[in-house]
Length: 205
Image (cartoon, rainbow, N blue to C red; front, side, top):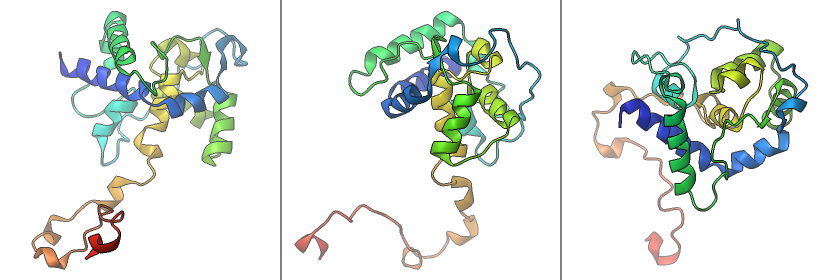
């Protein structure tokens, strides 16, 4: 198994283990022919900034269609449809409980269109995005070229968007350690841990 194939398999497991995101997707998803969009490709000229990976470009590899890791990995394009289907089938068969129940997450049957994605961003995320910003989200995270050109997010694209580093509860790049501050005795540091918060009674002594 190559590294690209491993990453693709990891993506399949990550998406299919998020039943909570599938339930959320089902709230906003509509049949693709009812999304309010024309069937012809609409958005082919929108450019994605491939150099805006921040301090954690490695995380982009798991969620976005582009990466500037220097590896030039665009796994959805490099892998054949058969290879992707194998990854999808392995993940779907391995997750017995609490899975999404979707063998192929980019079948193109249901999708979140621009209007539905805007409703989700406003009502659930508290974000107000422009039309072009919503298109940028779709083109950045939707792995299916056909759905991407029609301005649609499949479940996989929707899940990848929500699991992206831009939607983390906290920004890891804001707490980068300074190596110069790590040479003092252990007693000089405050260690943040929730390991003992469940202890009661004599266990606290």
